View 1 (cartoon, helix red, strand yellow):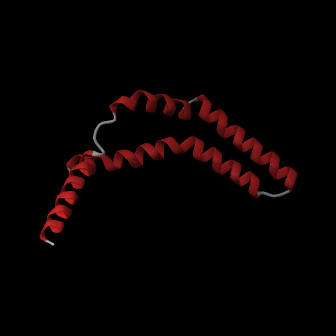
View 2 (tube, helix red, strand yellow; view 1 turned 180 degrees about the vertical axis):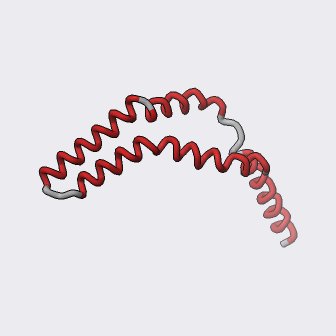
View 3 (tube, one colour; view 1 turned 135 degrees about the vertical axis):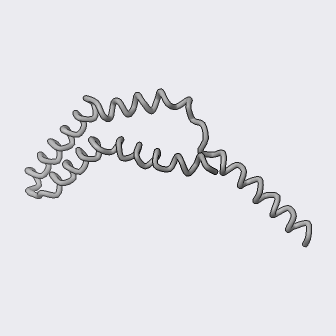
Length: 100
């Protein structure tokens, strides 16, 4: 019984130290992140947003339903604002991760 408790406490402590270091680092992906964010915020993202809007409007006309156009507008909004929202969410959590 005593040995089981000791092993359990040791396992929990070793797992806790790994979790504290899980958010650190990742600088090797900075270039990839900047490139993909540049695509999403640049001309490619705007083109995809406008294309989604036009496809949604076209399907809405064919089906005679406004819902396809709403989906197209939603996709255009996500393409336009999505990368900035994700960056804001991730950077808001960084001070919490660094203090552990």
